Image (tube, rainbow, N blue to C red; front, top):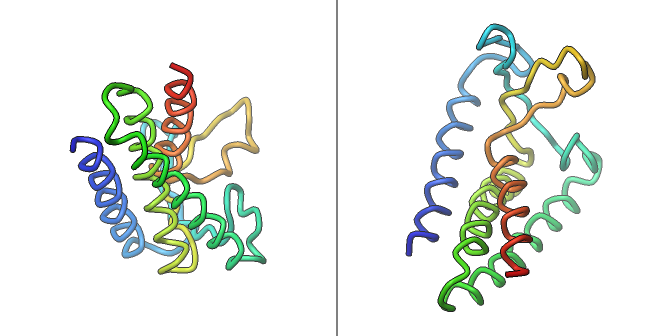
Length: 150
């Protein structure tokens, strides 16, 4: 049950944060925090990572939905088996983030991204804007991959 709660918490926290961001300022206004190492902004990502596929929003949304459903099926198949906590936790993180971003793609027609890093050594990466779901998806996918070979 804790895994379902984790998925719900990630989704609801992101839903709340994205709604706050939507009400905050104009798109692409930047507010630096943590001594300029991190910035907050509002960015509407109409594609996938780095706006890939922004001209094909319906395809990106469909792929996002299909992948989310596939991961949900894997999660359900592993949920009732004993053990493999690492895999279940990874899938929970992945699903919480995936559900949030897929919801945005289906409901808003874009994903709300809201923070980035100022990296002096990698100035091009400083232009990439993220949301927390992106990190949950990546960390969850890595954990699920590792957990699946146990």
